[in-house]
Image 1 (cartoon, one colour):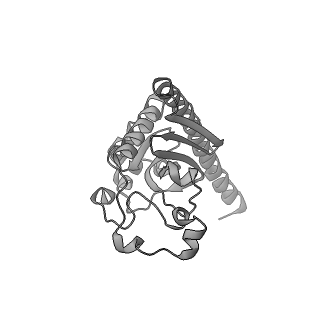
Image 2 (tube, helix red, strand yellow; image 1 turned 90 degrees about the vertical axis):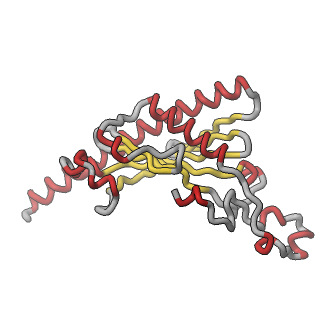
Image 3 (cartoon, rainbow, N blue to C red; image 1 turned 180 degrees about the vertical axis):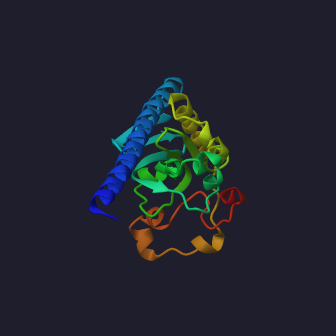
Length: 218
C-alpha cells in the first residue's frame, strides 16, 4: 500500500468515526432534554420524588423513588463482534460501515448508595443504546429496555424514541427490587465497623447481590 492509499484509507475511517460520534452526541443531547422534561413533569405531580442531575456533556442522572439511573455516553466508536446477532442482518451485510456505532450506557443504582457515599455498592447495566452513521439505533438490554436487533434497519433515533427509552428504563428499575442478601454473607461485622458507624459503608449493597436472578440472564 502506498502512502497516498494509506492516507486516504485513514482519512475515510476518521470521517466515519467522527460522523458516528457526532450522531451519538446529538442523540445523547436529545436524551438529556427528554430526561429533563420527564423529570419536570413527574416532579410537578410528585414534588421532591423526581430529580434530574446534570454532571457533564457525557453524563447525567435521574433520581426517582429509591433508584438512580445514570446515563453515560462513551467517547469511542465500537464495532460489533462478527459473532453478534446484529452482524447477520442484511442491513449490515449490505454496508459493513453501518455496524460501527457510538454507545450510550444506562446504569441502575440505589439512591442510598450515593446519598450515604457507599462507594463499594454495585450498579447494574440495564441497557445500552447503539447509534450508527445513519442515525439508526437499537437498544441492547433487559426486558422492558431492550429492542429487537432486527429493528436496526428501520429505527431512527429521535425525541420520541429517546423518551421511550428513558421511560422503559425507569419502568425496569422500578420493577427491579432489592432483595435481602444471603444470611451467611452478612452475618459478620467487626468491632471497628460498629465503633465508627461505618457498617452501612463497608457492606456492599446491590439489588441482586449474592443471588442468581432469572431476569438477569435475559
